[in-house]
Length: 459
Image (cartoon, rainbow, N blue to C red):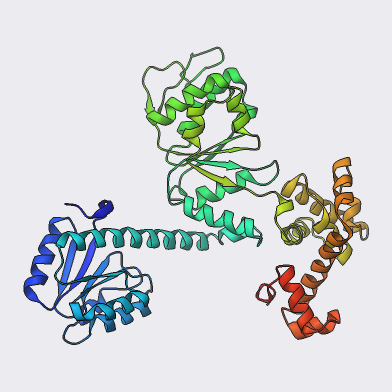
């Protein structure tokens, strides 16, 4: 019998009853676990640290360090270490308290070995997931962190970053959904850079930019002489992305005739060059992106259901800038700072009117539009101050959007900007901010709560 979920790994067993210790160790070793057994807890202390990748099974009552004391010691090393306690009947209340203090679970003597195996299997799976996430987060930290790439502290952006970290631990296909200009390719690159495939290529393809008659050759490659102009053999995008990540951008533009061929390649894990007879294996992860509704394309028969479900195992929704409360100000400041270094121009200070404009604009072009405005703002500052509002193209849509905002909404946006700016200038000092704004502490606290502002963000 294998442990539950097929998880087999390291087990540290501590049991002072030599007969029970020997029989449990033999049973677990037959299941494939690497078991280290001790009569006392003290020798195991040196074995276990924050990087320990196994499960600890310990009796509660032992000579020397008790199971409860041992648990408390391990908690200081790592609160996520999975500890399973073995208890006598009278120790059950103590074991329940231990679980509340961080133990994974307990078994009451006498118990069936299969029950212990199932517990170990679940604990091993949980431990591996924790360690995988830690390694992933450490890798993100080494590359300056995902927060420095996907910038923003709004709730939708925090959720997006969390989902990327979770999805990066798998090889499942991901479909990225979002409007034009939100940064779907940047999200795909973050997903690749956060994965185990980071050392291998990230290959993006714009499905809308490839002529339909060349699509198969571009994706799968071709042999010399396969068609007019094919003077020599050439790898396609699939082989170029071998062991890495292939991004299919503008997925809704994928030609219908190409869809069954793509589906077959994904199912087989192999591609056949145009003009070739033998397939070549490829190992890659597929990440797709679209700004159009694939549901309408499926309903009209322009996109195959079977391919959609193949590519849509996991979904990432990239929020439009108008739904990212406060992020426009943060991004604008960062973009202006970057352009100031590029052009050798001192960045002008953003005044409250400009900040309010940034907060109030609907940003139909999303982050891409904001980036262009920031560059124009910095360049125009060389000739003197230019209002942000003068740089934004006032289309009928943006004019109507502004007219639809009530006076209260615009006042709230302006108030939030003033409070944020003051807290930033005062480095989160509430007393100094109250004095600068001329409001009592209680009023400022209430307004900060209403606007979703936290002092810790400005310290």
